[in-house]
Image (cartoon, rainbow, N blue to C red; front, side, top):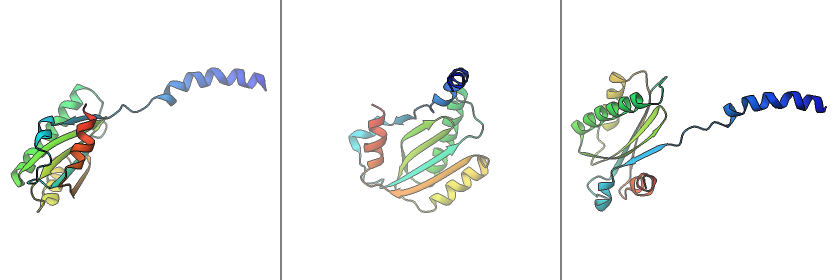
Length: 146
């Protein structure tokens, strides 16, 4: 029995790095200038857009691509409704952006169409919910950026 343990131990040590690797911690970004005016009653709804780039490789190029996509989505959103970009969470190939908006009329349809027309191969999610107290910004995004 001891001989078995002696032979298997080197194999376990060889594969240990693969088993112990963790996904990198998410990187939080928040517009800290909003803190003084939050919550803003004129923007009672939260729009959360989540986009995952398939087959990406983390690095500077990925960050530029994610920022470019977020800028395009923000421009599309501003054409529809007055909005405030509160922040984002980046984790490997996925970026989640948080916007506070005045109105939600047609928002889901417009944003789904935008993503389908421009990034159809990307996994995406759009969530819209009331957040008049700006709890997501004040309790999640802002504290995580300290």
